[in-house]
Length: 241
Ligand code: HEM
Image (tube, rainbow, N blue to C red; front, side, top):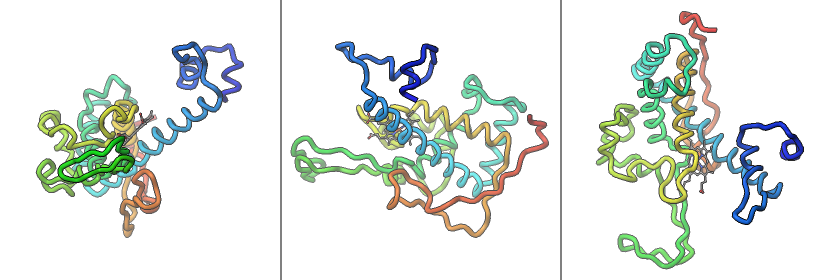
């Protein structure tokens, strides 16, 4: 694809073209290897994370029919059967709350790491130069002083008023600081839009008898321990295309 794109004269307004057009301060282009590395990073960082967050969202929605119903009501009422677009997002706040609350409980990037550049003491602990420190959003997101009854799935925690009251860094699904996820706004938009689109078109029901739990041992991102089986039923009554 890189070869093809380099030799093509057709203007394409997409990410690969932007990468290939990018120039360093000295005017030099990316090598093929650099372009491959950039693309792979974006695939790995940007694809699986959102997909996994959505798996957990449907898993949680299926277990909370009242919340699921509220989500579907918002979507049906706002969209009236139209396919959602970017412009609809401000009128679909509950979809965003559901997505954020999902990532509180099952943050696909459940841990971020930093390496100490020099010896440093943090709260009485010496972190020696070179040591790797893991910061677990999985644990931070379950602090009861900020998230009462932390194991409860409660999208109301992320109404704009309540979210504003959260202290900085109490909720860090995208990490923090200069290396914060570069795709965080995009991911939130993607999650909200996909939840709305899917809730509008189908109803998911969990196949009973599954023991689903997060499996941090085998994956970089917080996947479920196996497949999450659901029955997908098209929502006919909406007269959708
Ligand atoms: C729900 C979706 C996503 C989650 C939960 C997520 C989470 C994270 C986390 C925790 C980090 C590490 C931040 C740190 O070390 O402080 C990260 C980094 C990164 N993410 Fe995401 N991410 C998501 C979606 C995306 C998307 C859609 C893209 C691209 C379009 C993306 C691109 C990246 C890149 C390139 C980095 C490395 C940034 C750097 O080191 O400077 N991510 N992400």
